[in-house]
Amino acid sequence: MNYRETVDYLYQNLPMFQRVGASAFKKDLTNTRQLCGALGNPQNAIKTIHIAGTNGKGSTSHMLAAVLQTSGYKTGLYTSPHLKEFTERIRVNGQEVSQDFVVSFVDRVKPLIQEIQPSFFEITVAMAFDYFAHENVDVAVIETGLGGRLDSTNIISPCLSVITNISWDHMDLLGNTLPQIASEKAGIIKSNTPVIISERQSEVESVFVEKAHVLASEIRFASDQIKVEKSSSGWEVEHQGQKKFYSLDLLGAYQAKNLPGVLMAIEVLRTQGFDLPDRAVYEGLAHAARITGLKGRWQKLSDRPLTICDTGHNEAGIHEILRQLKELRFNRLHWVWGMVKDKDVKVLQLLPQDAHYYFCQASIPRAMPVEELHRNAIAAGLNGEMIPNVNEALQLAKSRSGADDLILIGGSTFVVAELDNL
Image (cartoon, rainbow, N blue to C red; front, side, top):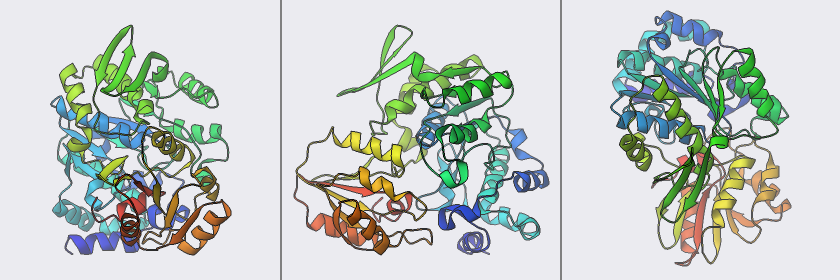
């Protein structure tokens, strides 16, 4: 098989959460352990940093990887889902895994695939570990896919764990309360291994404190020690009585919640012997998106009209987008919006009713049918029309927008992923 045939084989033969939802989620690590065992347990041959959380884990992973890479470390990065191409999930020093490696890996493990019938995510996790070991990386930043405790990535023994914001998402799989969701995320905390909680949240802090205590793991709440303010010239950071200024090419105001965790992680890694000079920290953060290839996080696509896409899709993510909107000046808001059908439609009640919406439907089985989305949106007091194709919806929004209007594209990672000009 060539690369395209190989990726099609994975899509067609393995359940993929991003496409079909909960039926693809395996609440067990057995398959991942069996896959990696057959490969010689490559995850044990590399040093890792584990990142979990509801919102912010992607940005945090990319910023940390950028700083490590800029400091001279050969750095692996595993994230999900991909936006445009499967190979985006697995990178070394910002370069995507080669298509040849994907083909050879799948060819090697095809008998195992047929034997144990793993999920799409389980295979990609095993592939990432195998690739990072093959490339002999100095360190790999590993982002969880869903939850933490039973996430396929959770077979590693990291040198550091980081947990970002906890919010409502995937309640059918992770729990119906924030403490239950936090408990699943806390599953990445390992014995005698430091853990950083990016943001202290009163509803869930005890979950992390108790888990860290049981495992004799040092725990730090980054937001207690590191204060971040966004200014016109960048990000002002106050820590231990000192103020520093950073530039970020990740533009969302919500990075104020992620940056303390990243900076605290850098501090802890230094105590473990990582040489992370200040200049590399400044440069890595200033160019994280370029260095790592991150897209879709409050990303500006064009000016006049200002056009921005953002992958935020749950309650907390939408609140952050709305907070960001308050910092912008524009005449009228046009919002290209699509959802997946397992998301709570109550989030529609958070959206501004004075915007005009272009309701669309991503080309995946898990997408909410545009007719259903439109019906729920009207019930929530929103005004708009149905244009199923994402790019056609954007073009219509552009044709109706004045130079001083604002166009947003979002509601789902998969809506952003289908943009032609991303």
